[in-house]
Length: 141
Image (tube, rainbow, N blue to C red):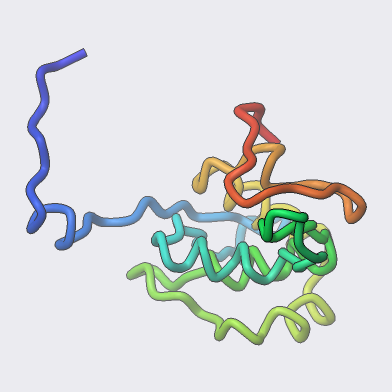
């Protein structure tokens, strides 16, 4: 591993280009979209759409559960972009997208979005699973 350079405050605040991939949706290769990495706040925004506050522990710690309800369309809304990397959808477009896009196409988009955003099993759980914020697994989805 190289020696590397420690980034400064300015370097971190300036950001860096986000990785982006072309996802071919049809068999002929004529129809495609771009999918990109999420920024930190975008990831937080996405995760809040799949978290439900279930209650509180005796010590006041919040208890959350994750839901798979519209997980795929919510992830697509947070990652599908134009060629320059600008997101195509508004946060509340997930229901309309989920109602109108083929499940096959949505699966292709989600597969690439999960790879780019290093989403693991801790990010995708059944409705009944209860998790604490920050719980994670290193296994890939």
